[in-house]
Length: 480
Image 1 (spheres, one colour):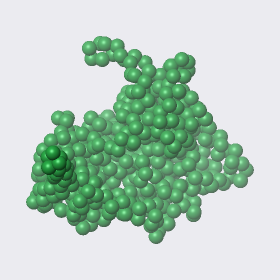
Image 2 (cartoon, helix red, strand yellow):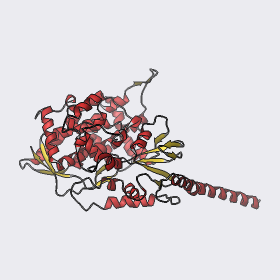
Image 3 (cartoon, rainbow, N blue to C red):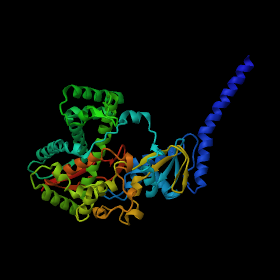
Image 4 (cartoon, rainbow, N blue to C red):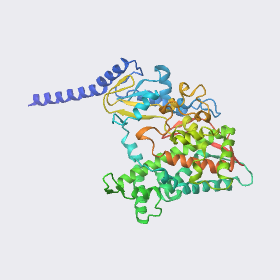
C-alpha cells in the first residue's frame, strides 16, 4: 500500500514538474527560437520572470532620473515613457521580441503591420489580457455616442471652464500675473466636466469617486452604484451620459433592452478613470506647447477671436471652425481640404503626435497568423509602439521631435503613422468628448490670457495611466 502511495506521489510530482518545465522553459524557448530563425532578436528569456526584472529596472530609472536639460523640448519622450523599448531597440532594432513573464511580446513599429492588426475584422487579434485588478478598476465599458449627442454637452463644458476662469480672475487680482500648476487645475476641470456631462452632478459630488480611486476598488464601485441609483430615481438631467446609459435601447431585432447595473458601473469606470486623466493630460501638453511657441499661441488666439469674438461663449456651431484644434484624421474629406488652406491648423494633432495619451497599444494573436513577413504563434502579444511611430524621423522627417503643426496641412502618407486614438473597429470611444472639451477650454482661456512656462518647470514626461508631466506643469498667466 505504501509503495502504491509513493508511486502515485512520485507520478504527481513528475507531472507537476513536467508541466512547469513545459510552461516556463520549453514553450518560451521554442517561441524564442522560432522568432530568431525569422531574424527577430531580443533580450534572452529568463525562466519564470522573462524580462520583467529588467523592464522594471528601466521603468524605475526613467521615473527617478530626470533629463539633464530642464528646458521644454520633445527629444526625450520615447526614452521617458517607453524606456524598455528605447534601450532595447538601440540594441536589437525597431522590431524585437521581449518577455512579460512567460508571455512573449513582439515590438511593432511598421505602420503597415500596425494597420493590419488594428483594422483586422476576423477576430485574429484581440485586446491583450490585463491584470484582474486593473479590469476591476477600469471596467469593460464600450460607450458609443454619436456626434450630435456630444454637442448637447457643450454648455456643461462651457460652464465648467467658466468656473475655472472665475477662480483665475479672483487669484490674479490687480497684479496681472499668476503662476499655478495647470496640470492640477486641468485634472480638476476634467473631473468637473465628466461629473456634469456624465452624471448630471458637479465636481463636489463627483470627486468622491476620484478620491477613493486610490483606495479601494470595491468602495469606488459602490459609490458609482449610489450615484446610478440616485439618478434612476431623480433623472435630474435627461441629457447626461448616465441617463442615456440607463435609457432603453433597441437591438437589431427591434427588441427593447436596458443595460444592467453592473454594465452601467463598468461604463462609469471607463468614463471616470480613463476619460479624466487622458483629457487633462491632453490639455496640459497643448498649453505647455503653446506657451513654448508664442507664435502659435498668437495665431490660435487670433482665430478664436475671429470665430467667437471677444466675449461670445463657444457653441457647438463654433467648434467646427476652430481649425487649430481640429483632429485631421477624423474630419470628413471636404473639411480636410478646407483645413489644408489654414496656416494655423492642427495644433491638437501635433500635441497628440508628440504626447499621445496612451503611448502603446497591445494586441494578442488568437491563432497562428502571418503578419507582414512574420509567422506569429498564437498567444503572442503585439506591442504597438505608438510613441516611437509618432517620433520616427523616417516617417515625419528630421524635425520629428519638433512642434510643427504645419506638418498636418498635407494628408498623412500612411493611415497607421498617426493613431493617437487608435484606428479601426476598436478606436477610442472617448475621443469626441476629449476633443470637444479641448477645443472649448483652449478657446475660452487663450482669448483672455497669455501664458508662458514657469522657470520652475522640469520637463519629464512620465507614463502612469497616460502620459503626463511627472513634476506638474507650473505656468505664468497674464491678462491679454
